[in-house]
Amino acid sequence: MNENLFTPFTTPTLLGLPTVMPIIMFPMLLFPTSKHLINNRLITIQQNLTQLVLKQMMTTHNTKGQTWSLMLMSLIIFIAMTNLLGLLPYSFTPTAQLSMNLAMAIPLWAGTVFMGLRFKTKSSLAHFLPQGTPTPLIPMLVIIETISLFIQPMALAVRLTANITAGHLLMHLIGNAALALMAMNFLATSLTLILLMLLTILEIAVALIQAYVFTLLVSLYLHDNT
Image 1 (cartoon, one colour):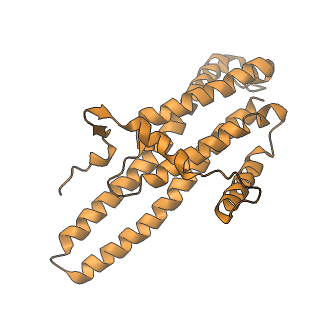
Image 2: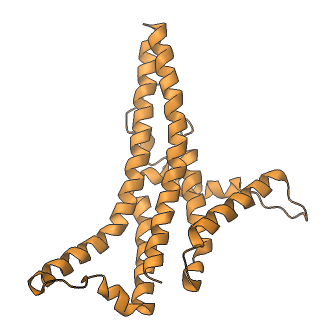
Image 3: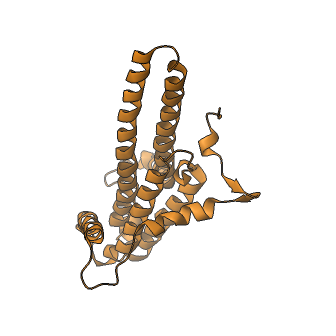
């Protein structure tokens, strides 16, 4: 079946209704909870990995910042599982949509900024004007710092979207090249398939790394404002 290059990024529908919400909620089903006193190995590994990542992100935060630990862990798990599920054939990746990533980045960024303005008002406002700035440069620096502040959620969303989209497009192109070469040259097809397998492994790593980077940057914004 010949598909358009951007078919994996179109919103899927079922009976004319968008199926984005069920796809977004699906990763929650992949994390089982145990009601037994002794957990099995899968849940034990899951809990140990969660505690390791949480400890690494929360070590530099104070008490106010640590109240975000549940939200940050939920965020990194959601993004990682959504990215990984998007690597399956004929699947849809919500994190490849800029609107989806903006919907995650803007509220989290706004929450950290509002916390900074509430609890560290002087320190937050001091970021707009570095100490020792010459008087003629004050208006220009205030404008630049304001723009850089409002660009932060856009940078979060665009970074995640660009990395996921680029990887999917590259896999799509190499997969089509392998199909085209299959009837021409067996050696070239084998090399292309090996390249595709290596790229798939790389994309799995990118999916996990981008989830960690997105959450880590939100954590750094939180640290600067608490």
